[in-house]
Amino acid sequence: MSKLEKLISLDGALAAFEFNPSGELQASSIAEQAKIENDVLEMLCHVCVANGAIATMQARGWEKMTKMEGFYPIQGFSLIGFEWTVIVNDRFGVIVANDKIDYDGTYAILDES
Image 1 (cartoon, rainbow, N blue to C red):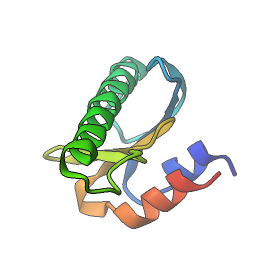
Image 2 (spheres, one colour):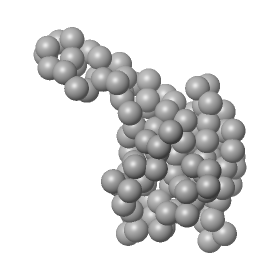
Image 3 (cartoon, helix red, strand yellow):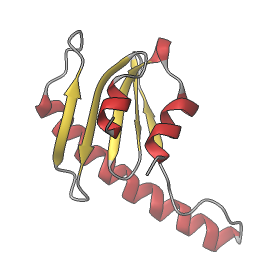
Image 4 (cartoon, helix red, strand yellow):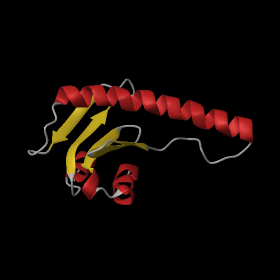
């Protein structure tokens, strides 16, 4: 089973997507009940790349300024909304309904090689 198939099969998953380092949508899977289109996922991919770059800058700066370690490299992050959350790593993301979300289980799938 591909990573995209594993992500979309998560309980509460509305959409799963893969993107390249430029933020272009490479592949997607959208649940039938989701009111999401690929145009939205394309924009979301760019948001994920931009936020990943900002988080990396902050993590590296924080480590340098405080001499604390463990913040870099960024391995993933979540964007939490009112009804759903996006969980993403450097290439894949999934949108999950907040009432069904399993952060640990989702990150475990994202971390698989």
